[in-house]
Image 1 (cartoon, rainbow over the protein chains, first blue to last red):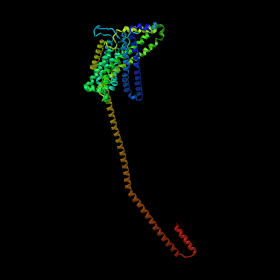
Image 2 (spheres, helix red, strand yellow; image 1 turned 30 degrees about the vertical axis):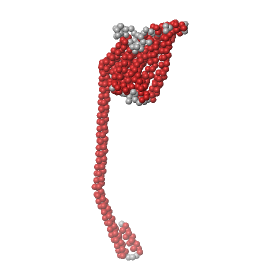
Image 3 (cartoon, rainbow over the protein chains, first blue to last red; image 1 turned 90 degrees about the horizontal axis):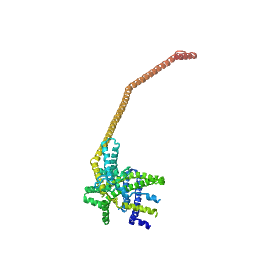
Image 4 (cartoon, each protein chain N blue to C red; image 1 turned 180 degrees about the vertical axis):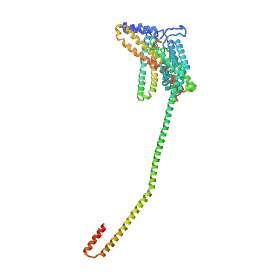
Length: 84
Length: 258
Length: 183
């Protein structure tokens, strides 16, 4: 292990990579659950009232977009940590 | 085994995203692959529309169907669902956004191009700034500067004690987070999709060249094909979401919630 | 050294290789310029030319379709009103026919009643005459009968008075008389 660290020019880079990976993984949990809830409820709504499926679909995409933003911010943090 | 892992060369991200200039090298107008894709994203929809107008027939077919159904799509699914009938004057803007983003995205899966221009921050950032200017201009024009600002920052029905906190949150979310999330959503989706495709393409070629492992080469290849289909959907969906969010912001600025 | 070591050194190599590359989240200036130009040109052409042009064609078509639909609608309503008119006329004609038939029937009834009324006195007269005839004949017959009975009675009495009153002659006389009366 000492060897390994010695090979790295800078141990901080390694820590950054670990942090970025962990950060993205953690950031994806909440939006994952959230998007599941959004889509599941949207499907329930569409099944109950197929005539309003268009409106529900649009709103569902909006909800997905807002929820997904959190995961994407995690992805951006990943990139910032790795390449900034 | 070590040799195999070591030999799996994943290209560094700069190699995937930075392109050498083709024209005007060294000037601010350096044209590279990304710039070319932006030009294509401008010319492709214009070509479709010009052809559709030139060959305009009573019963639409071919390219005219594409243009007209896209107009219908944007009108029914974007404008009518968010702004309402008085949003029809934003149709050219929303159509341009939709087409520009879609054609800059779809190059991700077009053979020999295989690069989504929106995985570079340039266009998403520019478009988000333009959208920010447009929805603020619409709000100021339709409500006046101070009442627009007040309606935006102070939502109705908030108890007095919470007001400063809510006002700060609303200000940040409307004027800072909106353009940022708009740009980042598009950029990160396309970059992630591109990296996924690259990952599985690299894995497929690596397995193909490594003799004994070629027996499982189909596995990443199948995933690659599936992801390609998925990315077509994503390219469309991101254009749609960007457009509909723009419409939602414009609609919110046009009709304040009382 | 192990797989981990190899992997780590590979990762580090790559990290070094891209260390000097610009951050991918910062937009590159040249791409910003080209992207802005492209989008603004697209928007300008779309707003000035492409969208209005296509919109005009679509509007013209939907107008034409709407016009056709309206024309078909009005033609249909025309036809319907015409049919209504015909229906009304037909009903009128039928009512007229029924009315005429009814009138004819009542006329015939009237004629019959008139005829019957006209013929009634004649019949009554004839019946009265017949009854008078019958009455007269009956009276005449009664008178005849009375006269004959009287004459018979007188004759018989005459005979009885005129002849001798022996038993045999009396019997013969009665027999003769009866015979003569029987004849």
